[in-house]
Length: 336
Image (tube, rainbow, N blue to C red; front, side, top):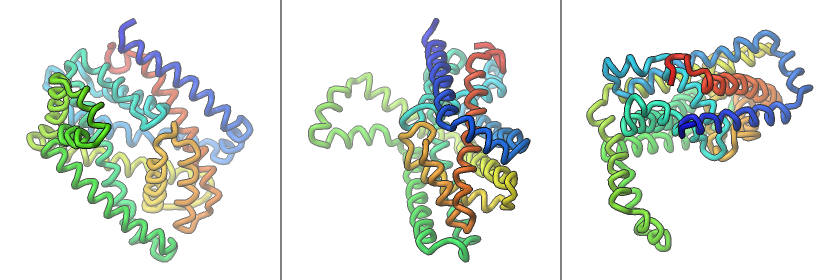
């Protein structure tokens, strides 16, 4: 079994264990009760993620600069499968949810080469982060504009603060794309006492060249492929907006009529809180707290946060199962 298959098998086994642990923690009684509340809506709730995964795939594909011949080797369906299975691995990866990136690189390197595959995946990972900040700006502006008569004053103040932070973060990321940031970051680490000795040992010529190559992957994207950069950012941001449909459908299923703007606001606050708790696998407990706070902040029943959280996790578990299955079903798109 080669390294790629061992890596896939490792996360397949971990995924099965996580699924079992999540089902056990949810409890069969609570699971049955909450599924009963939404009824057949659960199928529409799970299917709602099909609005976002194709856009994620289009974003990643735009950043991969595939030639005509490469598009034959790396089909859209294959990248779609790797998108879903990569996110499934990220959902179950403790600390920062980064397991899906190495998996995607190893899956792509046979056809694109290690450097191209790494560049493709790293550019998409960075775009995924950038779209977070764009989405938060949109969500918090909607909160300020549409919920001024419902949300407490501190929520408005916090929204303005996070809009400011997001703008600064976007400016910083754009500068990183223009000039490169990784080499400069390691040079900064060399100036820190104690840490500099450890970093200096790692700074071999080969390691320096690796840092420079990684920096070039980012600068080339923005400086030479700016159209693809903004196309990918549009797809990724639109994906985040459409992901809010899931919350809308869940609340509609239990008789709470909200619109897409409300759903975006709820998802904005929840995703911010969940990302603060990024070290927890699947943000266990953190997301539910975020949902409770978000619902309360716009005048909805805060107790519904637990229900929405549980149903969201059921949907997530369904996609983890699908993603884990796609790791093994290799004929979906192209045999690897």
